[in-house]
Length: 159
Image 1 (cartoon, rainbow, N blue to C red):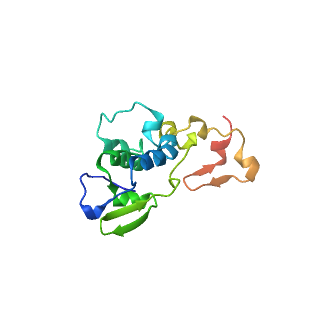
Image 2 (image 1 turned 120 degrees about the vertical axis):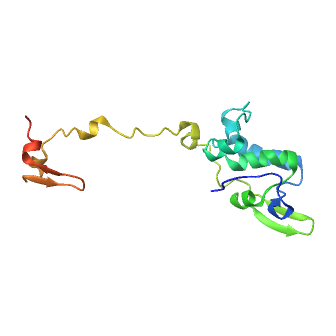
Image 3 (image 1 turned 180 degrees about the horizontal axis):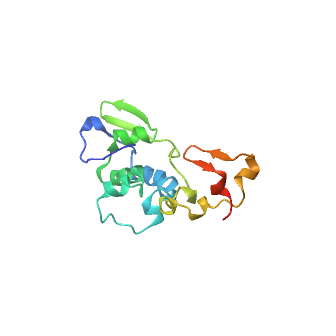
């Protein structure tokens, strides 16, 4: 997992992902703009009011979407992001070029991957301690040993 993106980057740490704006718009239209992991897909008028790195690190936005969006302004993305997207890297005398795959390897249009739908499970289910049957009847023993407790017959009998 990529921990941070700091701009501006030194020349040897940046990659040029697109040769022109049309190519960039075509790639993002096919990937980021349709992906449920990108916050700008889920909230079209979203503006980074808080620190963008916090939004990325907490999982609400894709770092690829953020970096490629930033590349519309500065013309490059971090080399580490290009490698993360599984781009083919080409070192040439006029710069490092990243040939991105046609489809981002992290693309998803499945709502189950939407970070806004990730609900933390309730850590305690009140029904988990209710046993609707007699364990001693099933196992035919007076003492039942588990990883966390030893249960005797008297505990399991209805009082």
